[in-house]
Length: 263
Length: 150
Image (tube, rainbow over all chains, first blue to last red; front, top):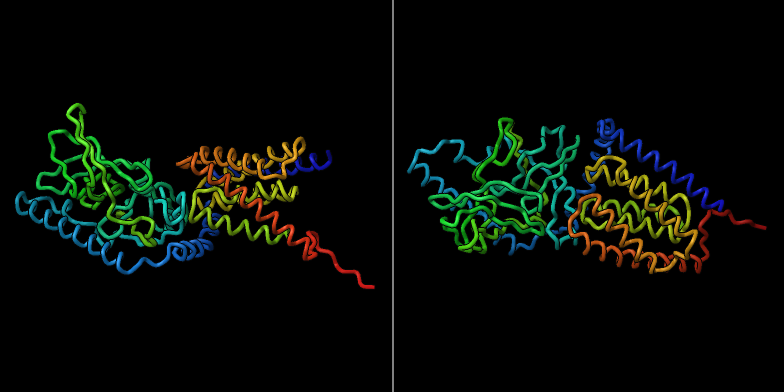
């Protein structure tokens, strides 16, 4: 009975403390102490994550690098063709400018089974103090990784394009681009939905972001590689056709990404 | 079992959960600490480890602590009525607790993770039982005692 009473007293103390801290945290009062702790522990987290992920095998890395390079060359070729044909606006044809790219280390990539499951989000070691804002795009080379979902002073959470909550407009890299919506399905999978039945999708087509940047420079810029189509589902009785899209990048192996800060 | 070993395990679990996996490793450790040690300091451990997890996972401070402290108290209520130091209770508490935790914090794949967590919880239980038995064999005591020399 005495022990039960002691447990109850201790529980009440910590319960009340938790409620108070929870209430105060919504006012932002703990942002500086949190930032201080983050700055101490994020290098440890980054080191721990990179040691667990381990070095990528050289042969598979070379193949993936080659794949990304080829995808970029196709993308550049399509862009040049469009420019010659229709005198496109310069902003749509350019990739992210180097001056707006902020490198960030991935300090957290929690997934169901570490190293095997694709995580739904990343935690990176850049935050409000580095001009990172909610909605900023996160890229790796010319491929889109995701968008900033939450920020604190020193850390930010990135929702990956394959996450169940992710959705954005995209287009194919054909001469006459096909528009659709890429929806993350979780588990590293995406689908290209809302594509008209009259449009032609085929396996191997590259998918690029269509661009949804707002006046503040937040959002996904156009022309970033999303992935490639691996299967098409087209039923005459359905309103739209859809396709499964596979990302060209292995998200489980990323240790550095870049944030497009728009400044 | 020496408290510093348990705190070190908790710290490692916080690092693993913040960095690598969505499985609530810290929560599973806390359940086993309470069931095996039956001490009130587990509430303090739950409070502080919850705060650390909130900081590293960018959640509102206090949210995870609130959950840990509350669920640990519910487990302590069961201890008054039933014998809880057995793997079946650990399995049950780990499964239900993980289920609620994943739903509250909006983490995907709830059922598979809850099942895996329940199994990991039982594994941790057996490992801790083994360590406690080894500790007794080697003559270590939980409380620091100065040897009395005659």
